[in-house]
Image 1 (cartoon, one colour):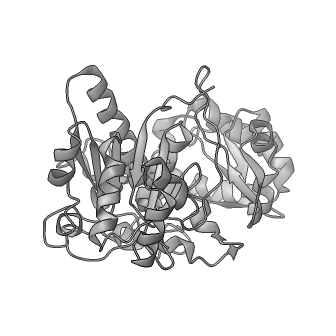
Image 2: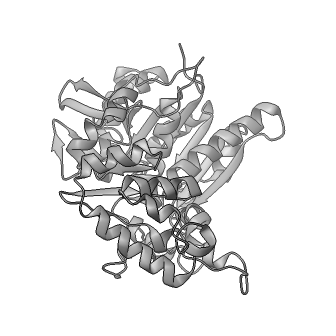
Length: 397
């Protein structure tokens, strides 16, 4: 059974993560994707720290369900082939620096002339214009600018730090994937034809950060009530033999925590029994210290079981190895293994959304560099003889 985007054709000229991951999300949902890479080593993510049999782990994680061709777009013949691909495509994605597509004759205005129905998505670091638009950028730079780093302060070690995964890149990818789907829907309804979507990483990252990260700065001026926000109170708790994470918001959860810690009397203690009293600075600080002290007395697994029994949201601090065998992750069948012809056994996450009628599936493992060049060119009517000429001219490998 085909996925919900079956029949949608995407030409993916993006590299690194923000564009490729966005396109992979759509590919998992059934879209046919042709990834276009330059000669040489291709997408920079192919040169990764974990590499085997022609695939790097980073590239593998954002490029499944795609076919790959190699074209030298600095050559006229390479661009002509790309235009043939775009002529009947639904979506074109690139994350070149602003102005690069236009210099190649592959900008939005260029491609809409040959395909007015095209959804053209430009992913960039800062947007097409502005004081930073010409700068090179990667995820940690965007994290720093958009506030992510400023709030990564452990209460015990109040020094700003990076989120140690590419949250800016990935939030941009999900934004781009959703925007492309929305544009396809608008085209289907007839409210729009083809259109150009601009997705700056700085804006996507800030939008992703805003709901909780900007709680102190949403109500302009003085607030009637000012309590610690999430980034003030998020923390890891040390047990007698490890760590756990719990979070309480409702009255029943607070009282459940007290009982789980063997302190049911706190439920009626006038300092802690109600939200109004707990929110007072002196009581909040006192209770926090008492909770830390009590948690440190319990073995991790025993305390997690006690908290879960009292309906307190709680979980372990899994190592990566523990995460892979966590009972709920195993139950959900959240990841799988597959055998790649040259790279060997791969471990990958399953597509997240579970569609009842149009299920997502992994149809293709990540492609080798240029693996499908000859196949795709033949589909365009470029026979073996013509391909040999292109190869001699350095247009294809």
